[in-house]
Amino acid sequence: MIENVLYIHGFNSSPLSLKAQQTKTYLNEHYPNIAFHCPQLLNQPKAAIAQLDEIITQLSNVTLIGSSLGGYFSTYFVEKYKLSAVLVNPAVRPYELLTDLLGEQTNPYTNETFVIESSFINDLKQLEQDKITKNCYQVMVQTGDEVLDYRQATEKYQACKVLLQQGGDHSFVNYEKMLPEIATFLRWG
Image (cartoon, rainbow, N blue to C red; front, side, top):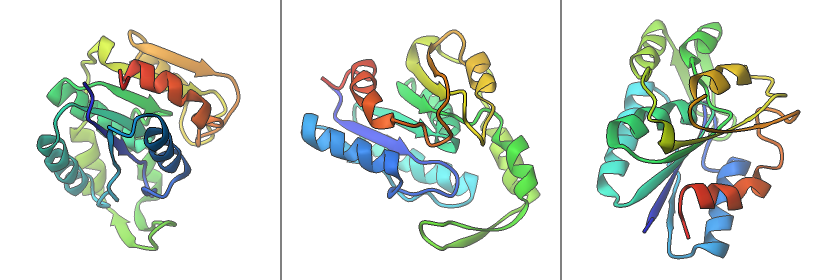
């Protein structure tokens, strides 16, 4: 029986993101016995992973939902702890994408500033998982994602359950309509 859902938000996002809030509301309405967790991630990869690792090891019967960079982090934890996860427009090689963002960044939700340095990129690279446990993932991608190339995710997770939708964008348009399917895959019921 699933007792905990850990939602891992993306880069420069927060627990206040629309998908995180929609997930929380859906769980409260349909699965009030399941606890929802969505921490504000620390801005550096090593710190965020340590933060998430501590949460996961303190919870029992946990499933993951990871959005964008949160999908990349979720993949690391699925393979480490043999969990199940739904990945929403997941980052596959964020260390390549974020090299264009070296320097100071500001989180639009928290107004916190932080710096992306080469060590940040190297730390992300160290988290990469080459081996994917196929039955542990449901991957949801939209072809209109303007931030990430959806084909990277469909290729990496090709042996997994992949839901490919035409159009949309990086936010995953109509995410809330996918929550019943997410619940079925993660066996919340």
